[in-house]
Image (cartoon, rainbow, N blue to C red; front, side, top):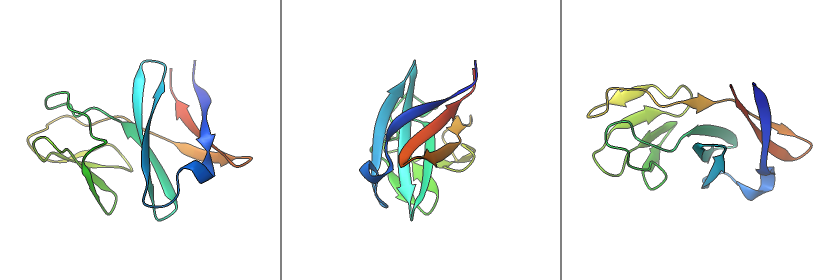
Length: 104
């Protein structure tokens, strides 16, 4: 069932920071880019590496293993060697809490 999940206080993720939070069987990478919070799958589809150690350039995250680039807004793959998109999830702030929507 589709639902919003409470993750943390919004103040726990200030601009420029990131964190990984498991939600069910999904490892979410949360990144705050200038006050806009993005939630994406924390796994590179190229070889299963985790994206949380990668660099962030604007609203792109770059896999630390082989340099695949993904859009944080959409999950779209922007540069090889990955050829598959990652999942991205809507976020919102509700009563000072950060929530993510997971379709189900």
